[in-house]
Length: 285
Image 1 (spheres, rainbow, N blue to C red):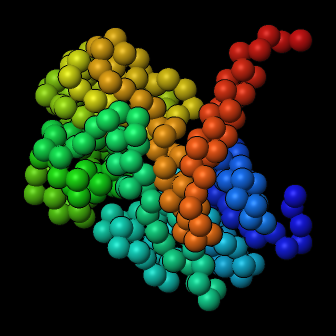
Image 2: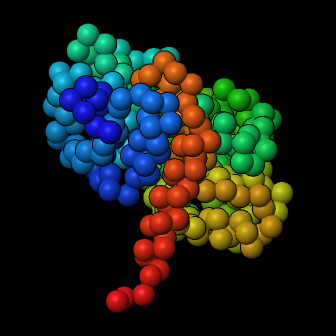
């Protein structure tokens, strides 16, 4: 039950109404008996810094950041943890003495999801990452740390892919031009394909996806074109729900200093997602 003693956590994004994070984190607070509540806050980009200062002033335990704030939040943080500094993206905030501290749990959450759901170790792999936003930065950084052999990045805005690889200084990274021919050739050689594109995006070259590939799409709201292509090819594939759960569990532990009830968080996210799908497909009264 929410009380005057409840500590606040939240999600800042634009928009956030689609997020499963409130259901997942509130289930975690209930399971651990901690007096906390997690809310969603729709904050346009021009108000991000003010929102972060307000959370610090109000004594928030912490918050998550989602699109489009993961890269721009860096400038409002008093300090960055090593992963946030290294990858140039922040998805989690803690507050210390009224100052925001930026963390990145996306990278570790991504690697955990690969292992838990797909049994994949990216060491030595030839990987293709689609997209070049804040999540893609964490994914590429995680693949670097895990020892991927080659990481190709294909983005609808090629300049962003170049900036990403330059920032991470990965010698074995390459930018793939966003053309059907170039992306198809890279898809055909890939052992691991990770999409960080919006769920409605239409990736290129999917007909070349090999059955040996492992595929993860960070979108979790619905089955994407990439996941449908992976299923047709017989490739191992998963959406982004497990990554959401794993990075959320790491955020919860940063805020509370307690072990996250990850099975309960996963079940809450799955239940909320199923309820939304049922509402969408329910006949009109």
